[in-house]
Image 1 (spheres, one colour):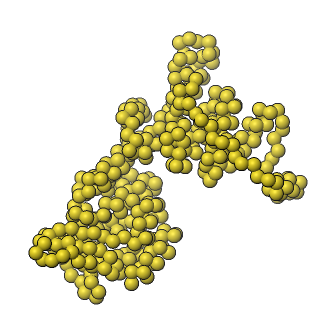
Image 2 (cartoon, rainbow, N blue to C red):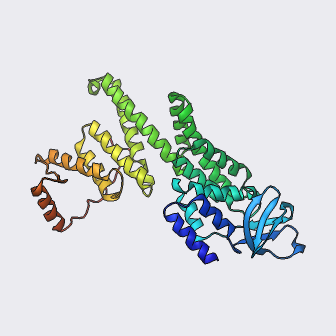
Image 3 (tube, helix red, strand yellow):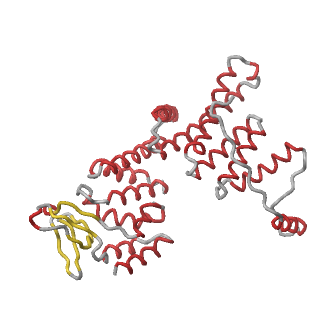
Length: 352
């Protein structure tokens, strides 16, 4: 039965398992789970399928027989995880919310019992909800885990997710000035153990610094000649760049944020009329993050930029349906030897 269950859950996970499929998996667990008696005199730990944690106790199944095991008899539980369940937790996708919710609700009352890993399902559910922007419910879940989970490591992870969600809620409900002040305070704490929060903060503050840079230049057209204005303008310029480059420098495997940061750095260089540095940022984006959402936009921008720098006219690379000559040129280009992408540039955060 276990192998059949595993196949069912894996197939479901490929397209987002449904709540019904998750409930079926719980009802047909076989002997995947382990239960330890509170009183050692009652014997060794035994294996069974924990169908659900009810208010009155654990609903346990062995073969065709079911019974309710009171919590005051249980010293510990260990939920076995199929490969499909591990995948649900690791990916934490929005489309997996129905299945994650079933596992969380079915085991939630075991949160305080030693050995229970239901908190992993809760954290995955909260992360998926954050992507779906269901912030209040996600926050309620992680706060419960941070307060009640028996595992201190998982409680710390829940506290980090709670901090991230707290700031998101503050952005939604607080004043812009207070949100920016709070963001700088959190940045100065530099909690690198919570990359989600750091990437959120740096992205938010990068936009604020870039807006400030643009506002200063708009209000002071001759800022380069103004000894009082220029230092402030330069401060916002360097801050916005530092914050934009932070993801690719310190969290390069977070491809979405890193690629977006390089794109934003290119926009800052473009605004500052620094085409060589803009091209370098775009080259890094294209070389390092091929599948990013900004890749095609960056490729087109770099083609135009190179034409400007070299003085040569740019050649369109995206043919239209009625442009046979362009299609033929693209076909020949595809058959030509491929040139490797340029190596990534080395940035200096304190570069003038």
